[in-house]
Image 1 (cartoon, rainbow, N blue to C red):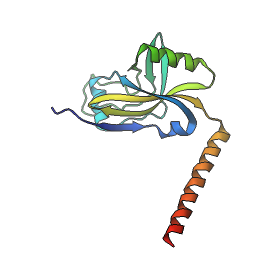
Image 2 (spheres, rainbow, N blue to C red):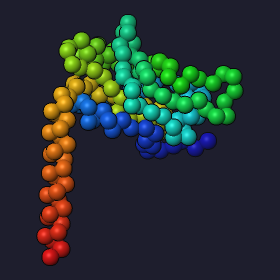
Image 3 (cartoon, rainbow, N blue to C red):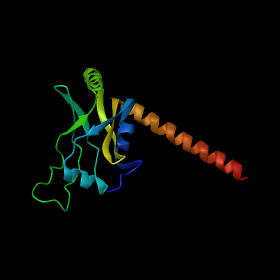
Image 4 (cartoon, rainbow, N blue to C red):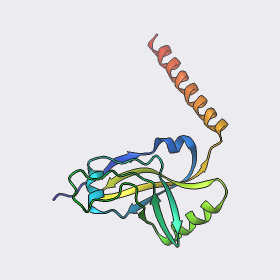
Length: 156
């Protein structure tokens, strides 16, 4: 079987960038069973409710939904099981220290295959207040309107 080259995104969590201020981004390997890999290769997963928990020096990805593989047998995986993340010890300790601070959490941003291996992009994030979210939406809308106005001016 030929080795896959490049990065193939399976799922991304766009809501996380809206709800959180992203402070640091890490790439982690993920321990998966065979049917989970096959389900991911079919391009099915959801990161919306996912988060990372550090327990006894190990990082765990929780609440990420990888649906059951349709061709699987009795040994199929549970869709929302805890999955171990593969990180260096220093990275885990840094994440654990930061998550103890008020308002900080670790959320998954993307799930993808990199050269045939499943990876997850996780971010150390701080929750936004409601007014911060409104301000970000207003800035985005203002930028869109400015670009539209410049494009119309160029057409004249």
